[in-house]
Image (cartoon, rainbow over all chains, first blue to last red; front, top):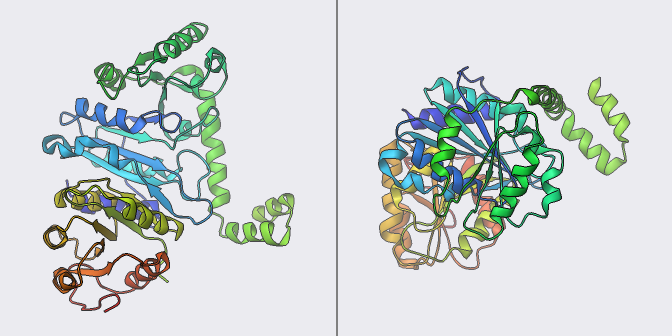
Length: 273
Length: 145
């Protein structure tokens, strides 16, 4: 694999300078709140999957809405890169959300597709730390893993609508910490009320508990049928948003809203022109 | 001006002092750049691997342990070996005046010591982006010399 060439190709796709290749294969988004252990867990999963599989990870972190810059800090969790044998079959790239409002910028789909065309067997997308209703990742990834953990509120949290409903697999991470069993039980009870409940696994990125099981489940992960309409909805919304933010007038109109008091309705009309 | 750059901020070697590296990373972020932080105690080859995967055009090396004269040139050498001649290398930390010349001739383009303002570092990145001053370039331009 020519890493330098691949990296530069990905940059040029990300910058909208070229179109990437079209590849087929599994794209799995791993999402969940900030600090729940997504990066550490993916690191442990990579120890299971590589070097048998070629795996690419696109780790998304937020772009500053003020400066347009970003601090991309997911990479520091990936100890698997210190393992020479495995590191060869792994590619990890940090992605900033840039102009996208969601937890994954739409361009990640093209980047994933390009990586799959370069013989990667699997692309894992680590989203920005996401809250209850952050379901944009459904537009990019066909399969979604939601990571939860202890000390995230009472059992009512498990009943609330949103992200959990779109999960194809739920992980309760930090099983080494107190309270993780209760979260696991609350979620399990809540899931029994669903028509096609996803699997739920307890893991600890610290001790390694459950990681093998998750790695195996990931290889045969199926998208749940009940969420296909919700996914289509996210795809449509995200494509629409992307059309707006890539409009050449967008930045100028933002300035006019914030500085000249242009109304949002008028701004929308101007963007449509 | 240079526009948004992808910049790796790295801590090579056995050195646990990362306040400076984090402040610089934050200043570059606030200056509109995309910064990838490597974390502590990285080897030169790990740092080069990060630069490759992340397609970074700049790498900032931070050292307060005294090993800069070994580590910085090693990283420059590995970058050239990998064919990454267009990557711009800069450094910072506690670097004695007497050591600077050797680091510059190894390919480091700027050395920022204590008291450097973030505005100066941003200005360096902007100017360096517009020049062909990567680690494999013959250009003898040095920041602040």
